Figure 1 (cartoon, rainbow, N blue to C red):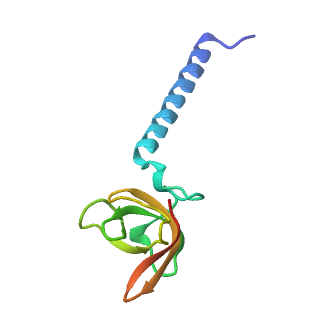
Figure 2 (cartoon, rainbow, N blue to C red):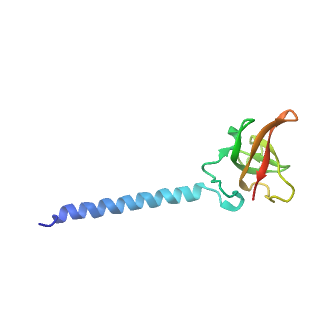
Figure 3 (cartoon, rainbow, N blue to C red):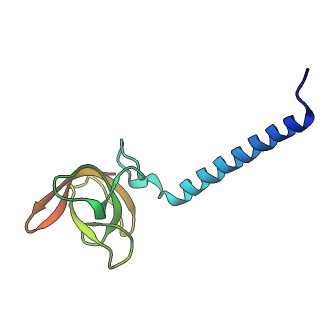
Amino acid sequence: MGACPDTLNRLVLAATVTGLVLLAGLAVLYVATPPPGHVVRGCLWWTATPVDQVVPGDHGCIRGYFAEGGYLADSTDSDAQALRIDVPYGACRPTRGDPMVVRGEAVFQEGRTMILVDDCR
C-alpha cells in the first residue's frame, strides 16, 4: 500500500516550507554579519566578545569597529564606547569604520582598559 496523495502533498509542503525558513535564516545571518576582511583566523564575528563587554583579564577573540586614533568601538557612531588597541607594527591596516575581530588580551594600563592585540588582519 502506498501513501495517500494528501499525506504526500503535506510532506512536500512541509519540506518546502522548512527549506524556505532555513534559507531565510541564512540570508539574515549573511546580512547581519560584516564581511570577513578583518577577521583573524580561528575567530568568528558572531562568537567573538563584543568590545563593550570586555574587561581586564579577558583574552581571546574580540570584535568591534575600527575607530580613528587606534580604537576598537562597539559601533560606527562617533559617541560609541571604545577601547584603545595596541597593535604590533604592520600587523593589520584597517580603516575607520571597518568591522574587525582581533585576538588579544584586555589589560588595565595607564589608567584605562586597553586591548593588547596578538593577531589581526
